[in-house]
Length: 196
Length: 192
Image (cartoon, rainbow over all chains, first blue to last red; front, side):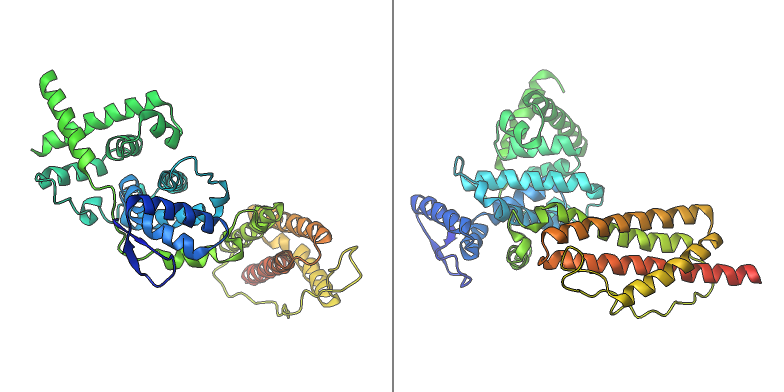
């Protein structure tokens, strides 16, 4: 998302800002939100919803579930804002909250197999990549991965988190993260090979 | 797939994965629901829902749910005669009693006593399993009532606790009435 809500009000006015100003604005918005300013929190929501929803969608594979997760993640974030000390970027912290939300909901629910809407139905492949069919194949194959392997693949391979970070988010050892990544790649290779 | 192919595939997979879009817009704006949730009193941490009394609330909800299950489990398909009791005023707040601010009105106590007598009498028409479920549910709900009463003693002005207590009393009466109706039905069937 290149634009950011300048005021954080409900006027929905968007205004493009340079990155440095965005960071400054974000810190100010977090500070205001920590003082229970819901307009500032809305601005943070507008800045980060696409990233948070994207992560939820990739982790759950269900659009409706991803919406619920993203929604719950922001509600959780609001209630825990006083714990955010700014040690990491707000977006990184939101990612952690979202991952925890997804894992928490998955633990409670056995709905994973009830995929109401496949990821590939709602994802738009980026125009910059020429091989869109490969991207789509990968999306579909990822969606068929077992939960543990998919989560690691999404966080490590798609979002670029290290194995330490991935393990920390998922509550597993870095070695387990590596093993799950290997498993994910092997399963993806089987699927993509079969599809060809 | 040989080792060379595997490496090639691995590289291609890494490239593709890194190229996947990391940002996706949801089909609908999630903010209105979020805004509604965070603007409720429980939207922030350290609310009453984080206190032990939230557990009492959970118990009440649990009992309400399990009471429904009890009803389904022990009900008879025949007609059920409802016991007509005015439950609108089963709970009254009376100052200066209870060591606390709240106590039960006489109307409730009379209705409760009457129902308890009928319950004791008619439990014999239920199967042992059903009796066990009913007894367990009543024990749970009465324990919840006791807990909420204790909480109210410490926080007499707490509206949530007042509502919880009212809800718990209603739950108890409701369960007793259901058992009474079910037992009546069972009696009629046995009489035939």
